[in-house]
Image (cartoon, rainbow, N blue to C red):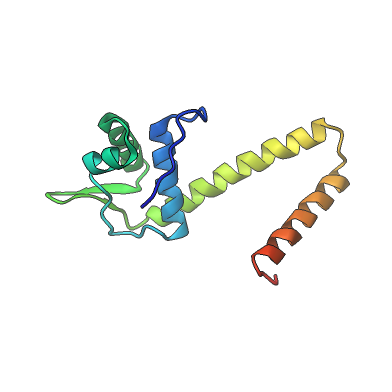
Length: 132
């Protein structure tokens, strides 16, 4: 598990850790039943305060992504993937809404916006080798 932490991007470090763990679960990189690194291990790996990692883990537990396994540590829950995918979709929807609002405020017509979106989706499909 590899996290990229940016102390200068305006997002709290504990939130960056939680988000990246959720993204890894949503993508299937981390699977239910897998143990996550201990607070001490991850804080050492990321060179951050252990309290920061502990807060991220607490948030992930509150969201139903992590659960305590007595005597072992924290593991990814059985329903974590669906929780994380829903969170990811919500985040993407919020970002799209913001971009679309900005585009409309900039004077772009709905038709022009749709064309830009279609063009970008086509480019993405081609670059990923997707034929759909």
